[in-house]
Length: 219
View (cartoon, rainbow, N blue to C red):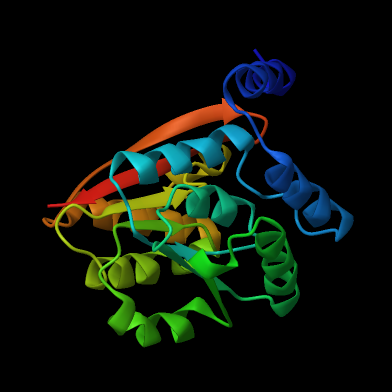
């Protein structure tokens, strides 16, 4: 098996199970046209986030890392009319494109984008907490700090999802001290040690190569 085979299986799953509507496809097209980094979640991953949010009846979601808003739209579409996604984005241009995509989706009433370093935005969100679902998908070196904020803004039953935790296997190489790999390793280690969390992580292969995500629930 190789990445070509993985991508073909992903394509089959998407064609069979993931019905992307016009606004989701338009968001991907807009992100590509704007030359944003091609690091959106895959369609299958986006729908998985959507399913998680619906499974738990989420009304308040925190997303750390917006990019062009593709995952944000998947999450917002899972919410009731009075639900809210607060999403944090470092790059103003990315946030501008995301805002356009979200407006095109008709979801602007459910989404608030905060622009700037997430570690500067997070202390301002106390009045919006607790969140039901927290999706961490930003600069990996700061994942341990994002986890601490996620715990502060959680309640019993909050689900915390971390994306891109495998890095093609580099996360398990203790000799690899790249700041993003080291940040992910500490992020996962802290979840394993944190008595308030029940956590696991899953490896994936697909259109995004060899990767994976972590899932934790606050006890």
